[in-house]
Length: 201
Image (tube, rainbow, N blue to C red; front, side, top):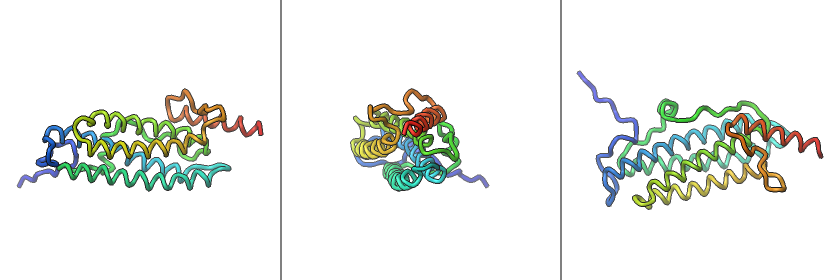
């Protein structure tokens, strides 16, 4: 007897959606929200990975700074998933789907110094925030409710990045990882700047 495979992605067209929104628009929005969901799940895992693997003299400050960010991003994941479900689609937060769908590699660092992790994490935030802003632009004329959710989340993400960048910024306002295009490059630049600063003390 043939069985029907259950839908595991928000990209399939919803059978219903919220009042006042067409099925076509709902499909576009939930597909974009699924991409944001995947990015936020990955960010959540990355933050916890750094929390466990950061070392150095200022370890405890960064270790404790990251846990509230993990909690905040977890709430964002839940909010996005519930919005997808509200709009009639099925959010997919499974690990296999994340690996299959994502357009980025795993976070590049394992155990590393504070400055190195924060230099790399700054680039992670760049990608998530830029894509959140793109999603806001995509849906701004269609669904102000979802737009509102993404705007609020982007503001929170930008604040989290500010906390990270405060560790990377010089008194002159320059980031120690400036010019880096990869997480590894960002880590190397930030680490080098930190070591130079320590020698000058």
